[in-house]
Image (cartoon, rainbow, N blue to C red; front, top):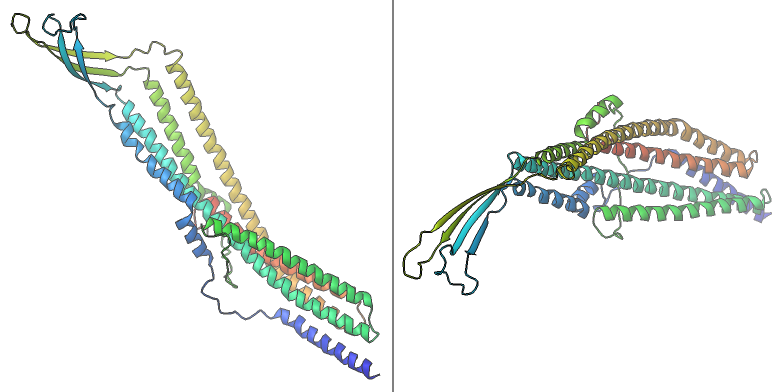
Amino acid sequence: MKRNEHASARLWCCAWYFCIAALSLQVPPLALAEPAAVLGLAEARARTIADNPGLAEMQARYEALTQVAPQQSALPDPVVSLNAMNLPWDSFDRNRENMTQMQVGVSQMFPFPGKLGLREDIALFEAEAALYSVDEMRLNLNKNVSVAWWEIYFMDRALETVQRNQSLLRQFVEVARTKYEVGKGLQQDVLLAQLELSGFLDQEIRLQAMREQQVIRLNVLMDVSPELPVQLPMMVPQPANNIASATRLHELALSSRPVLSEKAAAIDASESRLELAEKDYYPDFKVGVLYGKREQDLEGNSRKDFLTVMFSVNIPLYAGTKQSKAVQQRARELAKSQYALTDERNLVMSAISLALADYRRATDQVALFGEGIIPQARQTVESMLAGYQVDEVDFLNLVRSQVTLFNYELQHWKAFTEVNQSITRLKAAVGEENIYE
């Protein structure tokens, strides 16, 4: 008899403890002091932009291309020649023949007017496109870092939720075991609670593994050791909800997105190449001057020196198979660049619309879970708990209600994360941080 009374007391103590724990779910946790090692999103982005080797590579490529234009606008190097002309083969005597002379000369190639300017334009447009590619990569890095950061944030909140539910499931196990010991419960209730607890433990293991993967990804982007631990803040501000309209965002993208400017610069370069190919129908010029020094004859009489002036042009004799084909090639390359810009513009507009749709959907879900579903689910758990204590609700339904609440809490945090990730993708798609009205 005393044993049953003692077990009953344990049952009601566990039940009341569990009730208090369940009610405490409605009270937001107190904000804890954050250690100095907490990595904020802005700091993660700044580290990535400063240290990412891929971005440094793209920047070095742009700087290298800026050195091409001065080379392309310069004339070809002049040619200096030293000649021994009309030397007798049998004696190599410079005094014997009147036409024997030692020559020194210089010649210079002059491309047809306009060619050098076009070559310089091509190099400038290619450097401009490279600069826009640097800006585009910077946008993508910010996007990738932000998405990874928010994934880690979601994993942290999910792990907190799992651990909190593990604690509640342990209380379930204790309550079910106590009721079973006093003969008011079933052994299958104890086994069911233990099974659900094992499921939460398995989910914690999987979430920890997923978090480690995202940490490695974030560390690689920041160019630090993949094994470096990452700690994020527990609380973050709510995102702004005054996102501009799709029409406004599309207009911003046309002027702000670097990849579109890069494609436009590629079109400019293709147009200059086409114009240069058309100018190849016209010849280049070569001008040269030779000074010929003659020695005295065999009798000691002096000979006058010679001055030779040269002028030559190249003849486009094979224009049908060379210059004409080059013009056709450049024309098709120009069309390719134009199609590429149109295709990229369509992709950008699509990315903006998709990100905006994801933002609106996730925002609605956050409001639905936070203001409707989760409070209702918590009330259901409390009601089920009260009913189970007086044997009006079976243990299976109580466990199911708690698992349902857990799933809704995870979905709430997932939707909150997706709101912020969609804002990140939207900024990257537009190419502009200010996407608000």
